[in-house]
Length: 83
Image 1 (cartoon, one colour):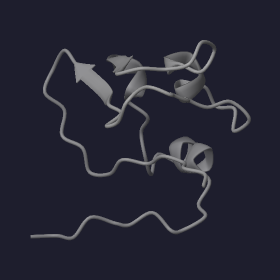
Image 2: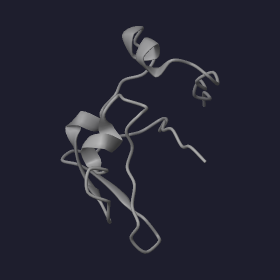
Image 3: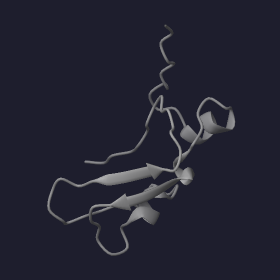
Image 4: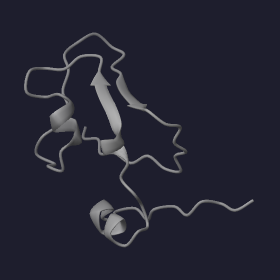
């Protein structure tokens, strides 16, 4: 059994996608959120702009639902969080 390659800390995800190291499949899914503030929803969560983000003031837990029409095997999930 082989161990999957780990993405190096600080690696540029766009560069990794260009070189074929990773593949972004989020556009193949239907995304939904348990709650969000107006103007801070799925579009902001999914865009490539680090200045925009998803924000919610709804009750916890917060859920991000990602539904694919076909079975997909994931090796790695990447995201950004800010304190």
